[in-house]
Image (cartoon, rainbow, N blue to C red; front, side):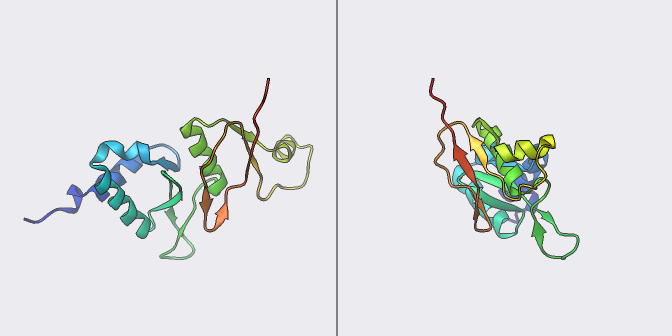
Length: 144
């Protein structure tokens, strides 16, 4: 019995990715496709083919083909910091921009924040990284 590519979990995940808005993909958004083990295997195959990249436990990002270097893939849109912030929003973790990023956006500061810190207002133990660079964040808890 031959199996068509359209019958595979990998193909079903690719179809589901087109429906999901934004660049951040959570593992929980792909649960309804099939058995957990087979979906994990299909995700691993997509990571190997560079259609997805793993940013942390259960957090993935789409990659897009580079127009300048054929065969290579790049991080799209807002970059890895923007995609991780999008994932934090999807996870329900409140966050805000750093002080210097706010000053730059308001025009009061002229120095461009290259790798800005994100302030997370809830305890978080996840390690989030891309290409060996860990996501810079500070945890700010407010006591009343």
